[in-house]
Length: 131
Image (cartoon, rainbow, N blue to C red):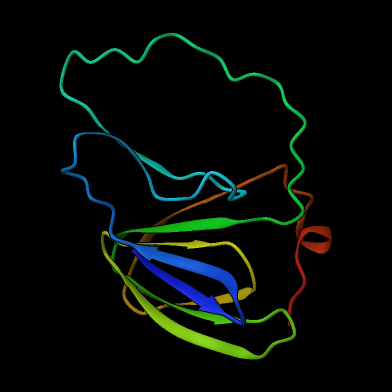
C-alpha cells in the first residue's frame, strides 16, 4: 500500500489488493469514511447470517475508491484550493482509495473501472464542487 500524505493529511492510498491472502483483509483503517475489504475464502466457507446494526454515523465528506478492472487511468490529486499534489498511474488490478482533497481522472487506455463511494448521493450540483 502506498499512502499519499500532503500537509499531514491522508489524501489517498494506492493499493494492489492481495487476492491470494486467505481470509478477510481490509485495505482501509477503521476510522475511514469508506471501508474497502477483500474476501478470499475456499469453497464451502459460510459467512454467518447477520445484519448491520443501526448507528448514527456522520460522514462529513464523500470518500471514493476506484478499481481498474481493465486498462489504465491517470489520477491527479489536488488540495481543495486547487493546488496540485501529485499524479499517479493506476494500472489494471490496482485501486486508489481517496479520503481527502480533490481529484481528476484521465483514461490512458480503454478501461473498465469500478467506483465505490459512501452515500447517499445528493446530486452533482450539491455533492461536489468543480475547481
